[in-house]
Length: 345
Image 1 (cartoon, rainbow, N blue to C red):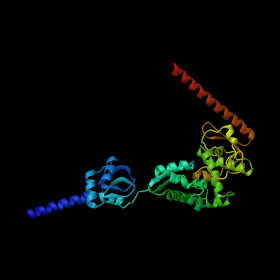
Image 2 (cartoon, rainbow, N blue to C red):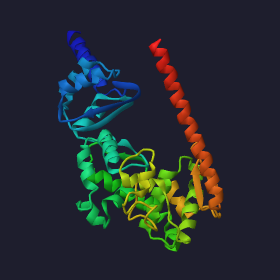
Image 3 (cartoon, helix red, strand yellow):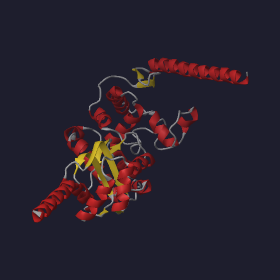
Image 4 (cartoon, rainbow, N blue to C red):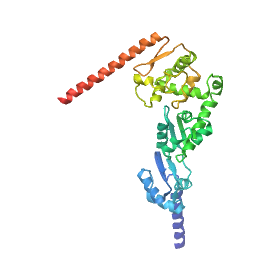
């Protein structure tokens, strides 16, 4: 009986240990928890990280399981805890460095500095490493036969799954390949039929991207610019002047006289290159523009534009816009004056 009792105790103990080690619900979370390991991490340090993230797990049992299973050191990377996992599955995954991909968002309307900052905040790589890729002399720019501005313009806005530890060059290649798939391949027929090269299409799309505050206006704005180009009129696109002066701000009258090859108020045709990374809808707008006879546009208070066919119509719309702007300044000054009076009282 004693032997039988010892055998039963052994079986129950072994069964309990085995269940605890391999139970599919040992580590649980009712929402995704993102575990970032900056460096190779030991069991004790990992247990502290997990404890700080409020994951539903017995920390002491986790450390016991790691020692028993032999998974005591974990590789750099991003690991996501969603739903439930066994100790063996999750610890072995990290020990072997089988990462979960991070969801990386590329925003439209970026410049090299903004793009590098966005990517540096979402991936392990330093933002300066990204910035270096968008110089004309970078190896990846030369490999693709693009200038730094052109390479940036191919950073197609979207959400991507990229490993957190990916190198800056690897991440840029991933996004560039998506541009080829989503733009070059999908719109191959329309690009081949266009009177403009792909680089020129993207350049015009980058201007549309920066000009259009209302997405539905993109095909109309693209049509207007194409109308002006077909008549050999100056493009007169404010976003190119903003690019020329190097500041995103309200333009002053003197800014339109800045002698810069990107100033389309002074230089005819398209600028030498793109001014930002347009999204697919901006590129599609250039390939599928609205057909109309508008040649002029001016901003409206709601962020949209008023479109005109003749310069006289445009002059009147511009005057109304200037009066609206002046009224806003008057209201602002009056509010500041009243606020100052109230403060003094």
